[in-house]
Image 1: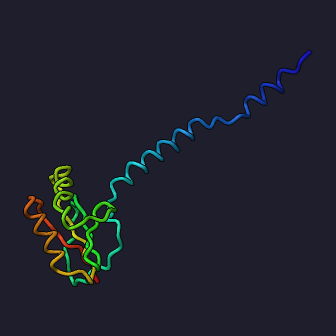
Image 2: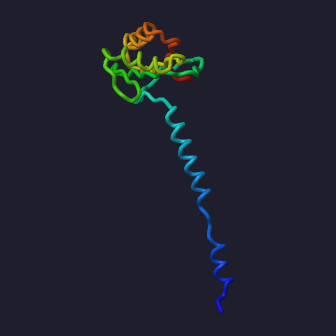
Image 3: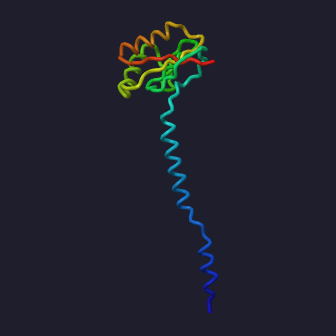
Length: 134
């Protein structure tokens, strides 16, 4: 005669991990999707200190100007000749968003003005310059 109680107890002690794995995969998908919304210029810049600046919330395009007057968009270095083409492409992707220029302390005002002029020619509005608050 076989003992049926021992086999039923062993089956009842198994833990079903399927719901936990479902939750983990859903969280993974959520973090991957939300991470794509974070925009970085691709280069570290030392911003100018400012006494007061209003926060700008709707960033569609982010351009960084380094201390050596290089332009960075979407983690890629962009030549001055290709700046208008890249800004036009990004503006066509998101016409409602504005543009923020992250300028280094050592960058020339001519480089910053060039980016702002190109943005104005394309129709990007508003254009803001990122600073550090005290």
